[in-house]
Image 1 (cartoon, rainbow, N blue to C red):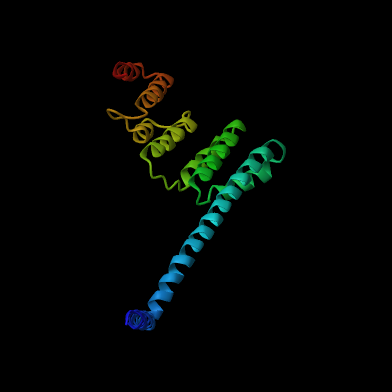
Image 2 (tube, rainbow, N blue to C red):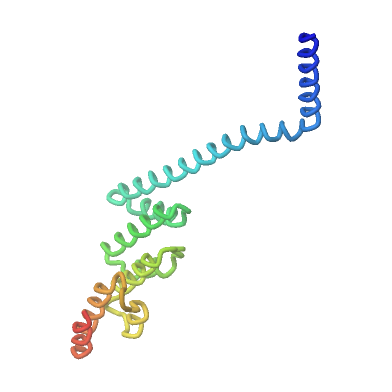
Length: 187
């Protein structure tokens, strides 16, 4: 009697499992496929993204080395890299181009680079640095209203001391001692 009862229970259980499987076959296979395929696809995507970042960084390093031997080729590579989606490599490339232009006394090209490149900067301090670079590069030919517009000095400013120093130097350079002394008193 026990044997018959256990066989009956096993048969009922197998029958329930078979009905559940046939009823939900598509869902079960989809779920199994989802839990196997999705992690694999994520890993593949992350691998290729890592390789892409690695390649752009190695291209940057190659351009940095070429700058001493073949400047034209290096500038070509850096110009290509400044359009990359990797923000770190983009900023490194732009800064290296700026350094090169400033070392070769091509301040017009450096200023054009800063004005024409869309930095797509999310952090406000990077935007402030961009404005400070514009002021420094065009320091000899900048007008007062333009320097005031770019520097936008305010209380608690991250680069307030540097901005005040640039403004102070600008007023001294243009023999505006009274305005320079007002800036010096603000510090």
